[in-house]
Length: 204
Image (cartoon, one colour):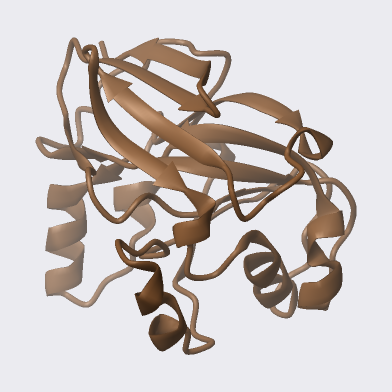
């Protein structure tokens, strides 16, 4: 199973979208050991002092995809869920200073809490899905897929030209353009899709 993510994929103003599409998607990978499922609590990683949260919709691949067109790519999605793409910002900054990769800053244990996968047929409009993140009772991020730069189909089609996507593979599809921030021990995180609470855990 592969876990992929895309960086910088949402805008504040929809008028920005076309100007930002340049056919170069910022794709990264995360190992399956980053996963925390079923709303289990997440242990604060000892490798960082600056842990950044980003709430994201996660698409799950339902059938083998290789060199698929944008027009057919949505048919390869089986489920949609929600998760947190954690970044160890201090680790990332240190790596960037040496022009290094994102792997350790995105790939540590516990970096991908996920839950709440629902059949894709539950979402008749993939370009109009609402989601949000609440931390300690305060709404921190609000997103809608109409503000996405590269939509689900474009991500799947692009990635499938480089690597085969297999059933069960997951793609974190980007976080809202504003609201990402720092997580601390004791924080209670709750993420919802269309008002339905699906991910509910504490950072311990």
